[in-house]
Image (cartoon, rainbow, N blue to C red; front, side, top):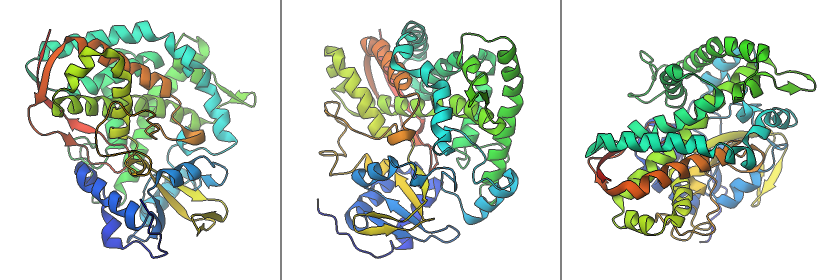
Length: 430
């Protein structure tokens, strides 16, 4: 495909839908919009009313070039996700001048980012994660039994929401009776605008609502994890909560907001993105006759199936960065201070990166998607996510005799982290 690089601004009416959470419930329409942007405006600016101008990065090569340069394109100087000018002003007022309510790994820049990442990294290496396989396999088998008990019809999100939730929260050390609260807070955070998943009573038409919801979520996590931190510092256990609570930066404790935010990202992104990929995988099975038989006949294909579900789902759809200096790319100059919208969703459908990108193909090899991000900010839990998704399908595929849609899949309304909120299936199991 030949880029038609122009220096024009992207027409506001064309690109405005990607600033609207409700648009992402209609995934095919959003993908068609990004397809046009890749063709006609692959690297251009847009100015949408009530937002600062953004560069929209739609191509895989451009996204990788920018995402791997954390010193030049910062994650914490401005909001890491799309937010209006009014919303950003409210965040700075709420935080005392910071651009983000949370100071998780997502919002940290070098050298601080690596220092904080190194706190939990040893607990999430491939070797460490492999040691968790027996525990995760047991949880996967339990949830496959739960699915079998729901035959012949169910909403698969009953499994896809709760299976990764239990895996991650068990690893952190959160008691099972508190898991529903963690799921609720996750949905308030990532799907603040969805009518079915948002915080009850919230008004998404209010420009202050997103800041208010983020503040409430932070305070709820702070209230929950403050005694947990004190407990693990007093008496460490063999769990991730102990690792984070006792982490050190330059010999001292983690800064308070960053410490709470560490628990927030572990307790939310640690399972919500996996849930999105798992729900997407079941829908792919239901929609593609013959795929289940292929996987049953050759279980070695399950790993390729998992990678394709992650590409197909792209749960984290975008991040925003800001330039710390002028930067030349594709004959363009991104100026110091400019905002850069990185579309992982678009990159994972890039015709120059994937042959026939709109075909669900479990045989893609290599499958160099950016479903886990790219560069220094690549998902810290990448090995755990892959392992737990594979564990569920390795337990389920041999027992699943048939599956088909029992209604329409419904996507959440979210411009940031997004996945299926309803996956109705009709199925039979052994």
